[in-house]
Image 1 (cartoon, rainbow, N blue to C red):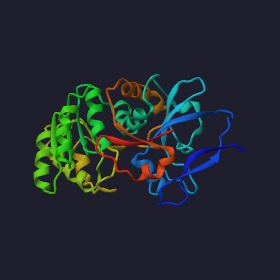
Image 2: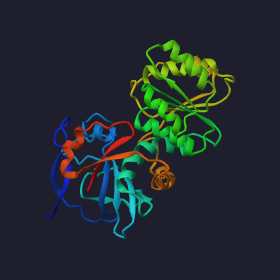
Image 3: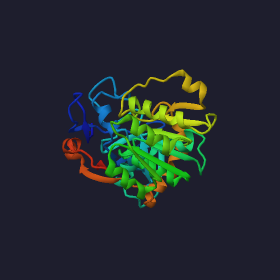
Length: 319
């Protein structure tokens, strides 16, 4: 039987190896496509390490949760993997999960950008009733996904964007990317709460990439300072860099129009991705929303796995 080259995880906690697997074959409801570029995202690393809820129960596994592919008709598509990893020369694709990518787009840029972009894009387009002119707080704005969320909010018409994060230099740079106000998240909880209350008391949506204790303190500060407690505040949990749990006083929900939800694989249906991501891919292809790719060949996957991305950069395997 024919084989193809792929990355293969054989032991959790170790980087994938450059290896060979059986070549996929077309089957009813599926087509074989050529993989062009795959982003090495935090979720990709976490799933391959057995630390994510999307991690498979058995090894070996081909890592990769998404990628850019070329279909048989020559068109490009972005795919989100559900049943198979993407770090292989060819994969079996469910055509219903193919998001069109404009011809001429750089596959590596699309692969680097779509994952950090789509969390905020999907929230603002489909998970909450966001309308242009409303205000957005990005909590954890100095990571790749958080900094992209600032750009996405501005791109989708937010009237005001507040960026909060720990890296002061990165925060200051976000002013050029659409942030109207920046709030440093520091160990001084009182000063941080005062700053959040001053800048974000009446925001409409919070995109929370932090969660944990920092989100608890931010939530208390913002709710206590809201001008109108009946004004709806959509607080959307996306990431957990600050911890996996929060303690929430029930009075906060009874006394304020606070709606807490989450957004991620499982809570967002494939139909939402199909409907919302073509416009996101077009924005990436146009250059409006871009993360810089750090390119590696598939044969260098172990080196790629060891690379630590700089701000605004994402490791991408180019096939």
